Every structure is written in C-alpha cells, then in structure tokens.
Image 1 (tube, rainbow, N blue to C red):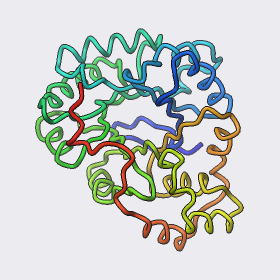
Image 2 (cartoon, rainbow, N blue to C red):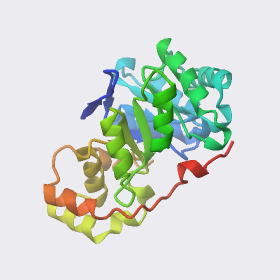
Image 3 (spheres, rainbow, N blue to C red):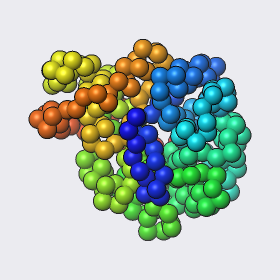
Image 4 (tube, rainbow, N blue to C red):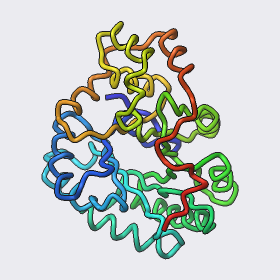
Length: 274
C-alpha cells in the first residue's frame, strides 16, 4: 500500500474501498472481503444507508483500529451547525466507533447556503478529536475558496468524481496549490465506456495489466487517492494489484489527452437535493 500525507500530518492509504449503493445487508460481507484483500481505507456515507453494516464488518475484523482509515459523510438534509453535530453522533454510533479518520460534507448544496456553518461544525468535531481529519466532497473551486476564507481549518480532502474522461485538471491544481488532497470517486467511471477506450486498452496490453488497473495506476501517479467500488472479491484483488508496475510518461500523456469533461454524476452547483 502507498500512503499520502494530509495537510494535518495524518496518513491516508492511496487506495481505498468505496461502498456506494451496496445495501446494508450485503455491505458487511463486502467490507470483510475488502479487508482480507488488503484494503484499509473504507469510504461510506449516511445517505448510503449502510454505516451500520460497515461497522459490523469493522467490529468483526481482527485489525487494530489504528490500521484502519474510516471515512463517512454528512447527508445534505443534515446540514446546519446543530444538525451536523447530531448527525455525526448518529453516524459514529452506527459505525460503532469512537472516532472517524475523515468526515466530509457530501455536497455543497449552494441553494441553501449552509455549507460554511456546516463546516464550522466539522471544525468543532475535529478539535474534539472525534474526526482525525475533515474535508468536503463535490466542492468546486468557488466553494473551497469560501471555506478557506470563512473557516479556520483548510479541508484535508476534496472527494470528487474523477476519471480519464473527467480529469478535473483545474480543480486538481487548485487542491495541489492549497495542500488539499484530491480523492477520486467513480475512478473507473462506474465501469462504463472508459475501460473500452482504445488508448487504455493498448496501454493495458503493453503492461500486461487490465484496463481497470491502468486507470487506477494513472490516478496513483497523478497523486490522487482513489476509492473503487466492487462487490466481487476477484475484482477487489485485481484493483489492489497496481503497485508492481509504473506507467511511462508517454502513457500518462496519452491518458491526459482523453479528458472530455464527461460526468456520470451531477454538477456540484446543480445538486441541491435534501
């Protein structure tokens, strides 16, 4: 496993396991399999409705708490200072933990203009030591700037959709410049057409790797933390088998040319759901 150091000195595994859309009655087994495959970063959220199942898997593992990196996220409906504090307590109870390693605001929902006071609640949780790092999810540059101007703690992480067809180059550079770790969800574009791309296929054949492994390796070499999701144990192992090869500069340049600003998920400013 490779690690990145966050802006507060905490280390985060560069490869993690996401549990989006895995039902609560299935997620315990999935997380158990992921832990067996070597994953130590587990990423969930209140709106996934599977925090309790994740917690059951963690409780059943023989791994020490210090070896795990657990992330969860605040639901849009729970934004606001007091609501956030209450929602965090509920997530912590479901996970069966005394602290999480990373707590994120799931979306900025700018229509309601509550993400600043919400982040100030995250700062309180962080200062109490119940979240070892705090950050945001689906935040664009304008949202990050406002947080940095009106709050005290620079986000440690910004988790966004990122893959070869949506490379987030401007946002990525902003995060690098301000020591915010970019984390990619949907890193394989949810298994859609990016893995059939001729360039990806050719690079994979050259290295004797799968298209998924090439894309995940591209993320790692771009200094991005990545959280692919699968419920298939063989694919969990495949996705983790990316530390024994390197893409060349030519490979990286070819992939850089695939960017087409193509999203699978909503534009942050347009998601105002509650």
